[in-house]
Each structure stands twice: as structure tokens, then as C-alpha cells.
Image (cartoon, rainbow over all chains, first blue to last red; front, side, top):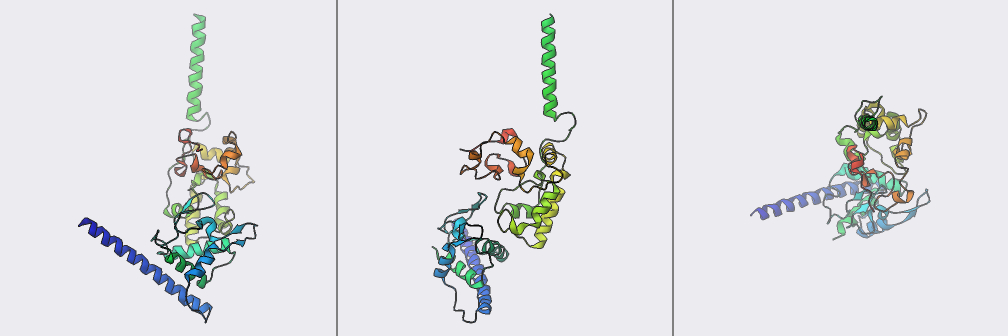
Length: 135
Length: 171
């Protein structure tokens, strides 16, 4: 019986997490439509390319999201200061994208660190779609 | 008999000297260890990417400069919302090395020239003199990373405890 309760609790908390990811995606969708009238939706494959795309930073180094998060979002990454970054894939880490302020804080920092500009809502949505698609 | 007396004097002076050293010397009656400090914002935000540095490791002017340049924080963007930044800045200033009275903070502070505002603890003369026997290659070990990763060797560094008994250098 206790296991059943635990299962239910886990199930509903995961549901709640999934709910908040979807709410966030809806917000980015609204913003993406404002950015681009021809917006057609978010795509996991575009997010995947975005995640792995290397670019030459003005400091002379090649960087991508995967530089710190590793090429496999199911695995933990490492910051430049040697601290563990929890896995990005939502199937492995259901906490991901459940706190909008946190999400915006990290997009704000990391987009500037890697791309040297802010990310568009389209890019953010594609990125989340990719991380949602990983089983 | 005379030899016995000499021996006694020697032993007495050795133990008196070591007691004096252990208590922190003539001029300094302050505590050895940095005090426990706590601020939830500091803890969460400052330990997101790196180990949690005790405010007593740098003087107020260093923390002030650090918090004013978070968009270029050692080459990374560590921007915070204004309210969080201000709260953490106040906390760091209040507990900084020049606002503390413990032996380690005092010595760090005294090792920094008045005209200097270091951002790296590892650039202070206190740090370099304390680590002069550690090879550069040791700091570069995968298990350590760099001199900024205190906690790799100083097990209790995040509590501000850098005592000798808490050191274990990983392979």
C-alpha cells in the first residue's frame, strides 16, 4: 500500500513537472510568434543541432552547450570551475525547466557565454523540445 | 646537576614557545578559524558553478569589485537580478576579511597591499606563501582542476575551515 502511495506521489509530481514545462513552452511560443509571424512551432531536431553546434568564441575557443553539459544530455556535466552540472534531459532530471526564473537566469547567462548574444524564444523552445524528446 | 638544570630550562622554553605559537603569538588574540556564516542567497547563487567561498577570504573592496562585474566573472556571465546581487554584496561586505577578527582573515588581509584589489584569493601573498610547496602540475590534476578549487584538498573549505588536519590532496 505504501508503495502505491509513493508511486502515486511520484506520478503526480512528475505530472506537475511536465505541466510546468508545457506552461513554459506556451510562453516561449507566444514570444516566438511575436519574434516571427511565420512561426510554425518548436522542433526537437533543431534543438539538438543547436545544443551541439560549436562556434568560435571571441576569446579564441570553440564552444557549444555540450562543452559543459557533455554531448549526452542524460549525463551530468561539469562547470569550468569543476562543479557537477546535473543532467539536462528531463527524463533523467524531472526538475529541469520546472522553475521559470531559474530557466531564464541560465538562458540569460549561458546564451551570452556561448553565443555572445541573447537566445531567441524559438531557440529556447527548440532546446527544451529536444531535451523533452530524449528518453 | 647543572646539566639537569640546563635541560629543564630548555624544555620549559620549548613548551612555552609552542604554547605561544599555538595561541597565535604575541599581538593576536583572535580566533584561528573563520566563523560560521549563513545567507541562503549567497549559498545558492555562489555555489551554482564553483565551491562556496567564505566571505572572510577577501577584503570588502575585493567583494565590491567582484559583485560589480558579475557579467564578466572570470570569463563567464554570472549576472544576477539586482535584489539578489545587492543582498549577497551586503552579506559579503559585512563578513569580509577586513571586517572579521580571526587569524586567517587577518593574515590574508595583511598580505594584500593597500593599493591592490585582488579578485583571486590565489593571487594574495598569503595564499602563495601557504602553497609554495604545491607544484603547478598538482593544481592541474583532473581531481583538482585549479587553485580555485579549495575544496578538492581542504575538505571543510566551504565552512571556512582550512586547518592542516582537514587537508587531503587527491591523486
